[in-house]
Length: 359
Ligand code: ADP
Ligand code: MG
Image (cartoon, rainbow, N blue to C red; front, side):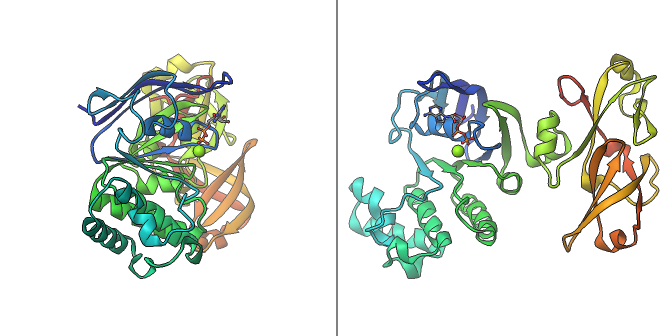
């Protein structure tokens, strides 16, 4: 049985706003789960229902198979890290780390050992005597994480813990948190709006939009097998390129040429005759070589952005702008026309009405 079970969870706030709809998820012990989605999609609300900080309007939350809806935050044995760190400003790093253990009445010498060990894991040993205001943002964030892991609880909840850090610190802390998770192995639910954090940290990702789960899967699943247009566009940077077209005789016109959809759909293409479909391909999935098993396009280059490791080449395909990720050396010699191939296996098809992936 799963360690945590979220069964048809709903949250309707007192003002009547329905923030989370029928949220279903099973989480195994030790998993690192990331909730990802744009601001306002219901990530924090769901996390707070798990933490016991927000009442569950309907549905059931089970820990180890036992109903936990009515348990308070302490009884659920969860530790939470917030974006705001929430450190005690008048206490030293040592006291901030020790505080929850002191409250629990743990022996002083046990506390000392645990603080030392936690400080070591997080590289805070030299800062134990300092007050939070004498620390950098990254160091404060480490104390906040330390305060959570020192409690040795089974469930670790983090709500956008890195969003107050600068880009470089975020990358460092990202790998540190992953490393800590490997060491302590606590079941972790991590909330972020940043798809890169989700992709690099998660065992499994839950993509949310407007209070609904869009897809649950490994980073690999979401990237290669997105369930719908939203997930396809959300995961990946720059996002997947899309174009809408009507199916005629099993084909669609794309960039002035025809794509034979039987290559993707076989006989099932008949189901879509006369209907709109959405084509998608990732900027990095193209090749400037004349590949076999590929769809070929010739497009005018509108703009290039040299980023160092890669150049983003903006082209128009019919009415739609698309981005191609190209090696800067190749981009430099492109000129005004980009001739490129999209392998059929990298071409995605979505239902034009439901926007669901056509498998
Ligand atoms: P996220 O963490 O994904 O940014 P939240 O879970 O904080 O989103 O919020 C989800 C939605 O619920 C938002 O539209 C937000 O405005 C709304 N919301 C959050 N808290 C309350 C509240 N106490 N009362 C009413 N609506 C709320
Ligand atoms: Mg939030």
